[in-house]
Image (cartoon, rainbow, N blue to C red; front, side, top):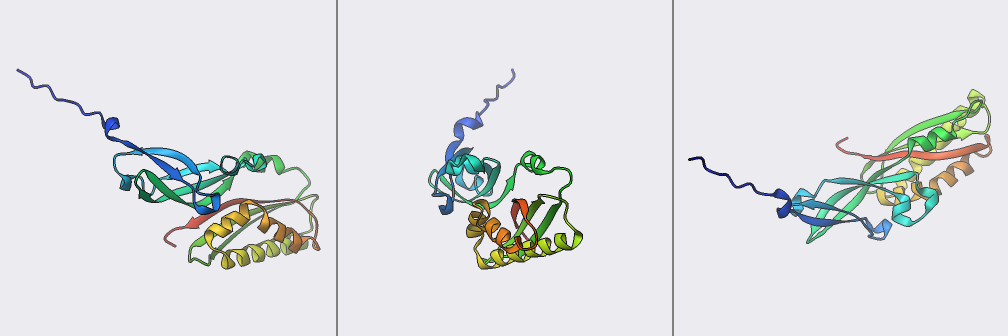
Length: 192
């Protein structure tokens, strides 16, 4: 006679944990995730648009990545580890007979995290190589200065809400007028 094995439904053992955004996003609940134990949730990541976080529709093209750092009871607390602009949004900005300037700046924040920031600047017309080089230098110096003076949370906040972009515009306006400046991607570099 064959023995019948009883199957266990793993879903019935799991609990739901609320994902809580960091203080810079007013500790809002950004989602839920299932797990058997709280320590299984630590390290998970989730992407949330800035529109969902703040209600600002004009920032719906930006998605922030959060990583769970600790769990208390049924709440999983997160920290921002980067953000990214939707690629189709960037493609819509690019036109013929303009100059696209891309920069990547890597430096250490005030709280000791190594951050990489990618910036795309779009001119309103084709630029001379000399002006392009000056603008690129201005962008890199402005972003590096911001990275060094801020914690990563403060940096993310300033990059998303356009404070750094305003500094770049002010720094480069005497060289030539830029049509659009977009911080396209920001990341914490781990283990480097």
